[in-house]
Image 1: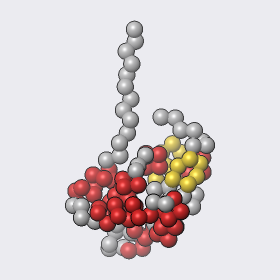
Image 2: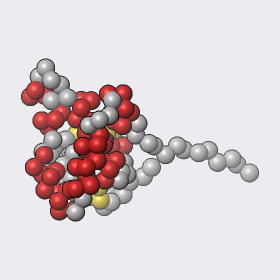
Image 3: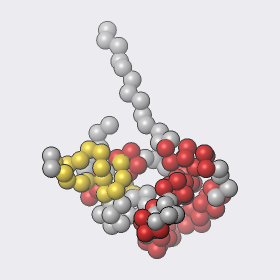
Length: 135
């Protein structure tokens, strides 16, 4: 899937809205095709995470599941929960006019089992490439 540099995406961790090119990271061999970084919250993510299309409800559930699955309670300073800018996210959700819907879905997700949460995090739908037959 080819992504255009001027296509806009929203960081799923802080709600930052920016062009794809702003999320690019540079490694020793040029731009990374796998690792992307939010220019605002500095959260590193896979391309699939950045370009994933989610409804507000799916976004809230995915983020809650990510927080729960990746939280490290033994070392709180490393916890995924602490790496999210809750103030920025909350402000942006209000700006987009989706705060109530987001937080209602968030609360609903709290009742999910650990296995269901892991499914939400790891089950990122991808478009399968189909082979075209040659005529």
